[in-house]
Image (cartoon, rainbow, N blue to C red; front, side, top):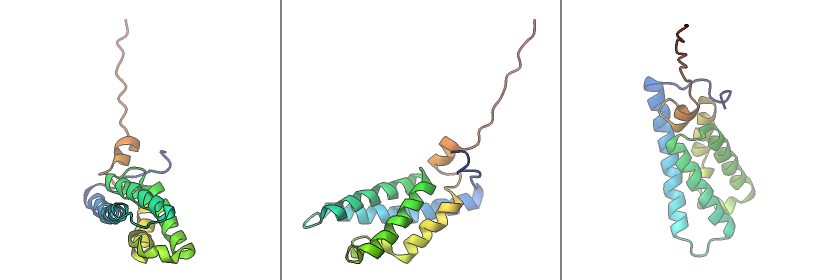
Length: 134
């Protein structure tokens, strides 16, 4: 995982990535939750994609596996737009060009320093204690 996350921008760039992640994640979570709550007449594919969007949105907000989820989000949005254009009205947060663009922007930039990825996969400072010799 260390190859995926070489840097975690701190300061204002890290805050900017946090705002970008929260914007796309909150939009995904809110639309997926409203789609799940209104299950009347939804096909199993739409219901499954709603749960996928809910998981991706929560992952964006928390900053967990951000690059992977950004790729999945962009691919899912493009796939829905190409193969099931009628479903695009249910998943505006996945299929809009702005959402795909934001997901593609997050993918190479990474999650930033304010994320679970930085906590779990970030650089560590290893302190080797001095050993007293007899």
